[in-house]
Amino acid sequence: MPFVEIFAPSGTVGDEQRSVISSRIAVETNSAAGLPDTDEVRALSWLVWRDIEHWFVGGEPVKEGEVPRYAVRITLAEGATTAQQRASLVRRVLEVLAEIHDNDDRLTGPPHAWVQFAQTPRDEQCLSS
Image (cartoon, rainbow, N blue to C red; front, side):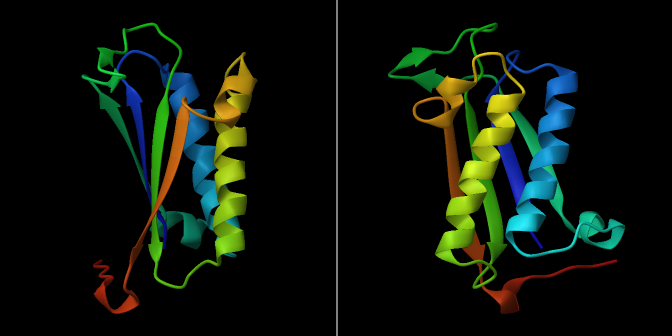
């Protein structure tokens, strides 16, 4: 199942925005991987939000209150998605981020959002109850 990490500079994203972004990206990640939107699937799809205290762009710190920047790392099982599905997921993630902010054009390209994929070999995944 997908494991998503969202990174943003501390103080740039409010609680309500964080909640909406997290919920929507979890749904989009599952959908892009071809998984149904059910309670069972959602229970296995984890997302963590990381507020980063020290975030630098071009060697200069991003100040509290500046427009948010994001890094989104999505870890999927090896072979769980095709290159086309991952490209679609990048677009979906950027659309979610753009919709939550007033100036959505800046989030559809660099340097305000970065989506990265990681894969784990299927035989190395471990779930416990």
